[in-house]
Length: 213
Image (cartoon, rainbow, N blue to C red):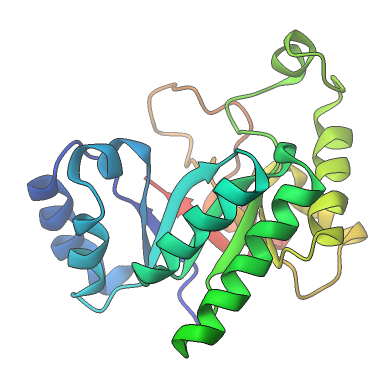
């Protein structure tokens, strides 16, 4: 079976990222490269992690006008990433452009299209956060609304908190992959993750992938 663990390389530099990747590579299914590491190390860190044979989840959460996002997705594909993220709040046209770009660029390069994942509501957000920005304050309702929009746009996967997995599995097509950050054992220090479950709970709820850092 596919290893569902995506290890987050949430470290500040190349040296720390490569050291951590080398230590845990046999135990994980992929590595996440997010904003901190990508900004510090640039595209080369993606290439260096891919050179180890590991899959890469590029978590930069693109959110811009459709053409800009489409070009960013094409650039990510040329780095040979297996997953990447866009914000579902960017709207239907933007998400369609992202998925179309992934498919077209992959076909042109003769490779598999990366999984474009729509980020619904960040796991650091709650009803108060949503109300502050003028959105539906019911987190589950907002997640479901954005998830339906993402599927309408043709996206094949979503990022959601583990607390929304069960609700989404009831309304989404079975093949849609759900990637869940907010994985905690309960022993960690408190942080900015507000909607969490343990790894076992998330898998039992129907998660496809667990982002653990």
